[in-house]
Image (cartoon, rainbow, N blue to C red):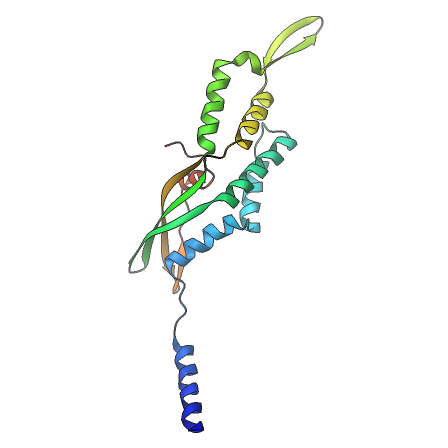
Length: 187
């Protein structure tokens, strides 16, 4: 009886070792979205690169904006809708839900256009007062409004994958899909 049990265990271990633990296209997409939710260092590094390239924000504004994006990532939720595999290519359809920053920004721009006097400052030089546009004041206003966003929006996304050397690899995301993840896509 012990020999049969040992033989059974050996066969079971051998079969388990033979099984492939291939990562599916859906799993790859879940890994990517999980990196946003957990604020993976690669995601944050990419975010820092984008924010550092911004010319019109002060360092304080950049830090506040970074915090807003981190809040976005932590609040991202998703639902896998469908996976289709066609040989060496695959698609995964996902519905994501994120904070609706796009609507807030659109409303901020509209307010800016309707109330330009609130975004002007007076500068004295040689006893002459002149009014100048202040991008910094508008950015402060926009960030203040973004901090108050609690409404969420749902977007449909399709991720494309290609099998390379037996492993599923995500194709590059489009700019539109990145905007959706950041809640900045205006539909």
